[in-house]
Amino acid sequence: MSRLGSVQRKVPCLFVTQMKEEPSAKRERQPFKVLATETINRKALDADIYNAIPTEKVDGTCCYVTTYKGQPYLWARLDRKPNKQAEKRFKRFLYSVEDSKEFIWNIEEDFKPIPECWIPAKEIQQSNGNPLPDENGHIPGWVPVEKNSKQYCWHSSVVNYEAEIALILKQHADDPGLLEISPMPLSDLLEQTLELIGTNINANPYGLGSKKHPIHLLVPHGAFEIKNPPMLKHSDILSWFEGCREGKIEGIVWHCNDGCLIKLHRHHLGLCWPIAETYLNSKPVAVNGTKYDCDCEPKCLFNHFSKLDGQRFNRLKDIKFDV
Image (cartoon, rainbow, N blue to C red; front, side, top):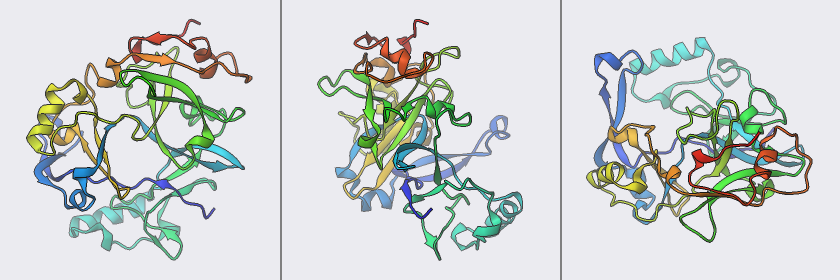
């Protein structure tokens, strides 16, 4: 398959980062952590970061919408990774040199097999028609989420391919203080990336659903613009994350005019995540437009939300299904 998926390259940090060794008690899990210095990254300056739009970095797993079998489909992130022998060779090389770009890969022999329907992400470098690995030795890419997929069951729960719709969490169009859960045509999401959040994703930092009645939703990237962002100074951003209600988020992603993305995670500033009360859970949420003429299985997410249509909740974590 010659098509390329959406952009899924490594997003540069706002600040130049440095490695800091972890205390001995934490060293087994992670020998070092990456911390931001006070120097703004040259890539951020080149992308005109001062005129970029800051948005909330939502904690989930990345997805992509593009066509498959002649219709819009949700695709899950799947990086092509090296086999054990190639990975050992790559790590030995990294210990001896500083630049991973000098390593020579054999794309056909060094990587684990992937499904035939896998596509590489856009804008990754290629050589002789083959996508090249990033600095971590991975080739970012996507696989389509089939209906009733066991491996990607939480992905498939938020899409209905018969109706060609997806369950979306977004800002309410008429009320900036209100969130909205509503179905959106998959055709309106073509060539966009989104974040899947919910009960069984990344330890569920937003408290959605329960083990018995899981809830998952898609959030388009850039959906939540930060209206009162901090100045682009290390100390100002740190204070904003620690003391501002709007700063109770995982991080910031700046959308630059040239299409470049720049990010900053709380971890880059030595701050914890997840946290007890997130900004996303401080807003009321309305369920709208979830009643439609479509055959849904009784236990499916779409059917549960159709019974909540028109209702409003104080927080995302307050949404419960009466089943």
